[in-house]
Image 1 (tube, rainbow, N blue to C red):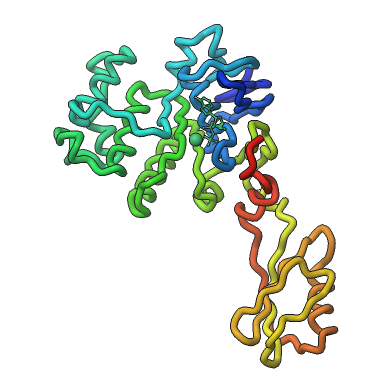
Image 2 (cartoon, rainbow, N blue to C red; image 1 turned 30 degrees about the vertical axis):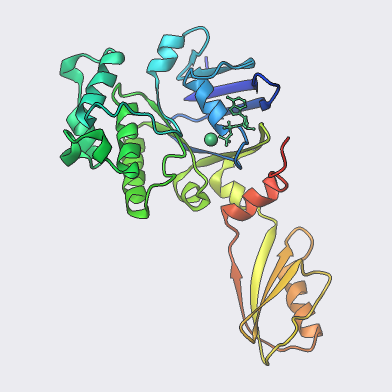
Amino acid sequence: MTDAAIAIHDLCKTYQGGKRALDGVSFDVPRGSIFGLLGPNGAGKSTLINILAGLVNKTSGSAAIWGFDIDEHPRNAKASIGIVNQEILFDPFFTPIETLEIQAGLYGVPKAQRRSMELLRAVHLEDKAKAYARTLSGGMKRRLMVAKAMVHSPPVLVLDEPTAGVDIELRQQLWSYVRSLNDAGVTVVLTTHYLEEAEELCDRIAIINHGRVVANEPTRELLGKAQEKVVAVTVDRDVETPPRAICFDKVVLKGTRTLEITYSKDRVNAGEVLGAVQASGLGIVDVSTKEADLEDVFLSLTRGAASSG
Ligand code: ADP
Ligand code: MG
């Protein structure tokens, strides 16, 4: 019916007690993509992923994984997806290799088709294959969870905040593994609050806020939406109080001679901003602009998100 790796239509979730965590969410995850699902804390990301995982029951709406509706074809839907939950869940009595073997058993993967050791190697846990679970660091456990999600070779891998608490080096390793899976054809969905990572990794990004989709676009186009621009202007003399102008949203003095000016590109252009600096009696020596990043877009789309909705 649909070509999407994941198709979500008008999904709603109200928890017992009345909290409406998802409020009519619809989007498709294109096959073969690395898709970022971003949003501030409490936006509803984990709720959505837990519905796909079958851990949370939706209130209404529909979701299909690899063309299989989660209500009509729950087994096929489940077989098509591997999920790494936000919480680290482990049986401490099993070694990594046992953990993978048990998981493969649960998914009915025949012994001959199991590749537990290969998976451990891929997540750099080969030498910990027979270690006690309690000797694994948080980062190692996280990587073991990724391997565990892949035992049945699903076409879709979903990672909910996989790098929370993982140090930079291991994060890089995890992402290179995720990239190699994607190169091999696996569709990847991830939530992360490291916006730089999302910007670098994801082909497409959806942003949710208070249970609603507020953006869903190719990463490049989303970045183009940033309305705030920053220009650093170096002037020809020391400045004590930065000049003010209506076209500046914000002006910060960096050192004694550089003004960092924020302006909205939908309201003014760089020429007007520079004109205002000159009009204040300062000569311009140098100008550099900073490209908008995902953080700018994210903040402008989710402003006021800290309040509960
Ligand atoms: P995110 O993963 O984006 O941080 P969550 O999906 O975890 O967001 O949470 C969305 C909202 O639903 C939050 O307000 C959260 O407090 C609430 N919520 C999450 N799980 C439950 C639950 N089991 N019962 C009641 N409310 C919940
Ligand atoms: Mg979450």
